[in-house]
Image (cartoon, rainbow, N blue to C red; front, side, top):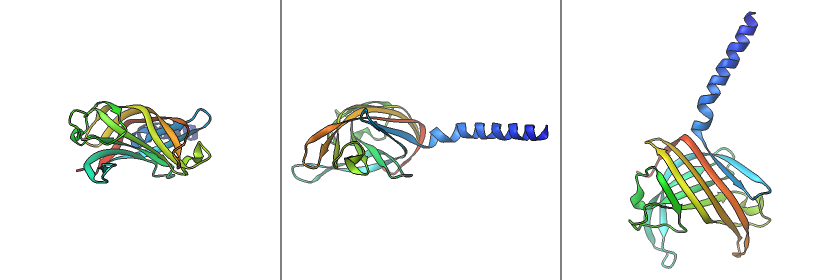
Amino acid sequence: MKKIIYLFSALLIVSCGSDDGGNAETALLTVSDGNQEVKLNTILGIYEQDCYNLLTGQSIVNAPRLEGFDEEDFGGYIDFTFNQEAYPMTSGTYLKTNFCTSDPNELDLVFPELYLFGDGDIFFEESGLFEISSGTLIISNITEDKITLSFEGEFDFHNLLGNYLGTVNCTFDSNNTNYEDFYN
């Protein structure tokens, strides 16, 4: 009888322990093209992003960038560059833009970027770059060190010559996930 009680106690402790840790420490990045899917657990941080004028090569502004990076397998990452004036970040809906912006009238825009290591050969036969085509980021809660967010978007994939090869769907979700703020 004691063995059964000990076994039940051990199972109860394991069950309770697994509820607290798993989701709170990482965010989930999921990328798919309809045929295959990649899931990456990512850690979160806020960093400084240098934005450049493409014509002059000069730095326009240093802006806050929220990054989810797959530290365990180094499979890739997603990042979101915000308007410099949008810091400190708050809850809200952020629409995608294709460039960094410092316009104080565009505080609700965010520039998402997706990187998967192994280049495009995860989904496509050639190396290349992902370019955002549509997407919305919703931050539902943010505190000094935790964030709850969801992102849904599409990225077009182009090979190194600029030829379009296809589109991938992307979701990024965190539920009260820890993050570190390195922007200050």
